[in-house]
View 1 (tube, rainbow, N blue to C red):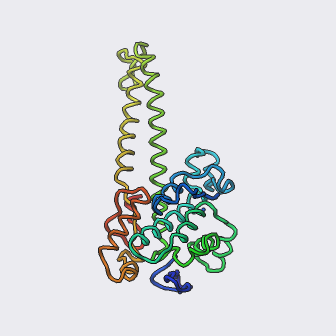
View 2: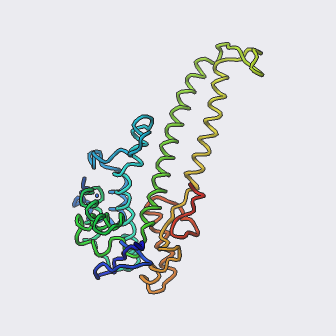
View 3: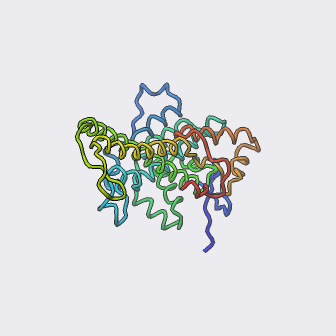
Length: 295
């Protein structure tokens, strides 16, 4: 069967498209937040994963995870994180599109934000079986949770808008976790090195006993390697780009159509979605996917 996906046309039913696919526990928006912009509401809701959200889907399923992975790393790659990030990406896109003049209401955005973590995996599985497309399964599951927003979920986007950008969000978050662990280890080793700075131990060269050194100095050798690792991880976090808003084959054609050929608005859309998702930049060129050189 030929692979295809769907595009949701604004204020129109879902229409199959062979070149352009479409397309939340609950975060409450209090009365005190009514004066906040939609972007601020989204950032506030998306900034922290609720502790009681999706408890049965917070572990990444892999034979080695139960044996080796930390709880924190497993959570980053879990279905709960993956599919709520899809919803964050759809909400960021709709928020930016509204800011640039697309007819998307505050009520639609509020429903999207409120249901970021209200993922019904049974509905998503049933819809995926119906449409034979994983992204469309979750588009419709999100649409059932936020029915007024259904016409604008995934508006102009392609499957890899959520798939690839989520991979990069997870890579970034995993690197940040590794960074935190490295800092903790270096802190522990610092205390150990200082405590044993004058404790003699035998040094070696060519696997032979040699001159004396100290346990503290030897510990500094381990710390130096870990510090190099930390610096490398920090560079990777700093330099990691988002795929961004690129369209089906990287030409942004669907967004140019959406904005009536206004190239400048498409550029701003790409930049704004990156900002809302916490990235400083997008990869300059992509096809359907971002380059795997990044991986």
